[in-house]
Length: 434
Image 1 (tube, rainbow, N blue to C red):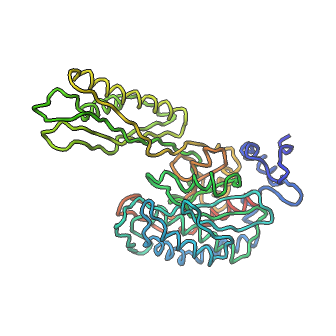
Image 2: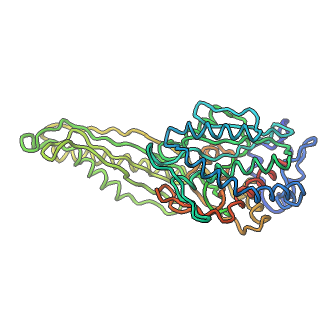
Image 3: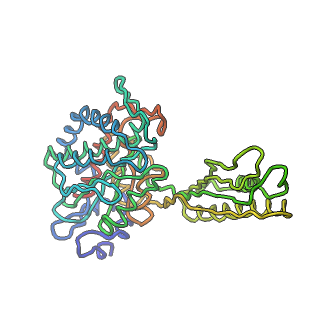
């Protein structure tokens, strides 16, 4: 019955593929064949092939070159919403690597195809171009032995380098796949970029064409992020008439309302499982010490990997803001009234790929087959949030090396044995597309 739902296109639909589990089912996956196309093979079987062994050696031997590329790419500034120069360089590298149909879409994503014998299954493997650092940041990278230091050197210059290493390993050994892969260097993963690159990818550029998605980020090679931590972000602005601190005393004060609202928010009790968090990150308002302000605002972030829990927190947050407004207006009821506006400034959808899903199990077995150790599952906020939310099997994996100080000017990555990251990425890719 499981195989009866395979589509005419020759690959298992999303709902079916998510239901495939480990152990005996993985063995069944190797037998899932329509015509001459098998859906997947266990990583240990794929790794045993001479051409794949050769590709692993190519990746290891060429790692010094791709570490140099990691540094060079990272010294091309890619501040939020201004990733174009780095994107142009990745487009050149994609073309030089022999990818087909290299293009840049409306969101600034760089795409390059490596067609297989069949259009499906279609895997997208991605790393993000942007950093958190504003324009003008010194992005020079220093190197001391295997330790690289510079803004963004791990997040996500490591992912971009791993992406290029995977392409190189496939090309040098002329590896063929039955399914197809599109490599993507995407925009807007960080901060208020709000995953705009991946949203464009799934909603427009490759809408309806993607069967699986893998994002490469800094992190240990044994990391398999199969949970997408969603977040809602808002700017909350209280406004009123304002006036002189002495002459107009008695007016409701926007800063007073803000303080009351924050106090109500901070009193909210949140669960630890599923984990829910919240934070007032920035605050502003007022014009002088002797003026009742006409405006005060704060920016707010709430997160959870569970969409129901996130929505429950969202309702409590909005009620707390309203309560703060009502309390301030009630306190100073004689003259003037305040109002409040809650503006969304970012929505990162929550999602989850079950541990039993084929893509997670293949990643788990790949880590084991390469002798890296035991896979560690977890949740995070990354490009994979978008496909997870859409029900498309997706994971985020570590690009290799050991990173520290992410999002700081002192960001570092130790690239000792970093070649294991692209080796693992390649083995997962091949296992999914064989």
